[in-house]
Length: 271
Image (cartoon, rainbow, N blue to C red; front, side, top):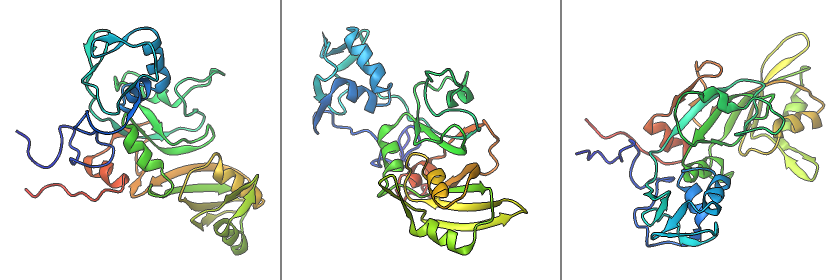
C-alpha cells in the first residue's frame, strides 16, 4: 500500500487543486459547474449533457444545469447510468508553436494547440492561461481547475518570464518605463522586470517578467513605448523553464513541479 504522503497520482495529500474528500460538506453549486470543476469536461459540455437528460443525481434525471449539489459530490451523480469518479489529475507543459490559437475549436477554422496532443488519449484538458496566435513557448494544460486557478491568480500565482524580440534597440529610459508602467486603454500595464538580453544592428531581445497575464499585455506595453514585437516566447512560469522541450512537443509535469507551481512547498519523502 502506498504511504508516502502522496495520492495515487503522486501528488502530496491536502494540497491546492486536490479534490475534497468529504462530499457532504461545503457549499452547493450548479450541477454543470460541479462536473466541470471536477475536470470531467468544460462547463459548456456539462450543460449539454444535463439538458440532454444524460445526468442523474441520486438516480433521478436532472434537466437543470444549475441544480444545486455539493461542490465535490460525484458519488451521487451519474452520466448515462454510470456513477462518476474524479479522473486522475493530468498536468502537462507544451512548447506552443507560433501560428496556433489557444482554444478547443476555432470558428475561423484555424489550427489550435490541441493539434499537438493528437492521438495522446489524454481526455479533457484545458490550457492554464493563454498565448496568442503569434506567440510561442511554455503553455500549461490540466484537467484540474483548482490547480489552474492557483497558477493564474495574479496575487498568488508564479511570475511568467518572456523573451521578446523588438524592432529597435531600446535605451535605459525605455526599459525603466516598461517597469514603471504606462496607462493604456484604461489599464495600467507594466512589467515586473525588463532587461536587455542582446542586440543586433536593427533589433534587440529583451527579457520581460510579468506578475499577471492580461490580453496581449506585452504587445500593448511595447507599442505604448514605441516598440514593435517581432517575436514573443514564454520561457518560464515560476521555476518551471521551457528548457530543451522541442517546438510542438509536450511532457507531463513531475509531482514536485505540480506543487511548486501552485505555491506549495513539498519535498519527496526520504528513502
